[in-house]
Image 1 (cartoon, rainbow, N blue to C red):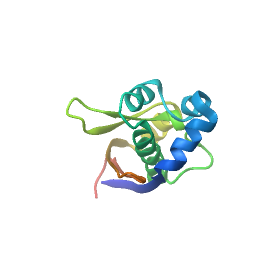
Image 2: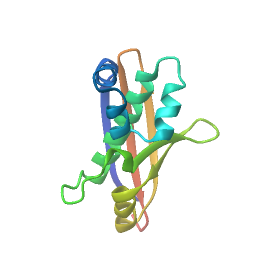
Image 3: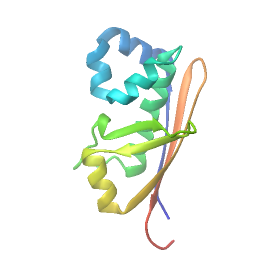
Length: 129
């Protein structure tokens, strides 16, 4: 059963500008060490940072962005499985919300062009339709 869905789009230039302006302070606030290592290993890291940023936003929107229990940027970690498929790992508040609402999986899709990155997230919940 679908609990929620979210989508987000990010301008690559804005991600590049944020990284240039605030450097590691920005990266460490928004991304986990594994997300940083993955994105930095690519030939144009801003595209990969932007796609992961969009995915985090999409997940927050799928949860309904609860104001009483805000999700930290690093509570949602966007990684890749052994086949390269994007996957989401929850930590902290996001993991608590996952358990609270019976979320058992996240279907995530990301894409980017030279100028934009987009992501879609679908939270799947245990239970009848």
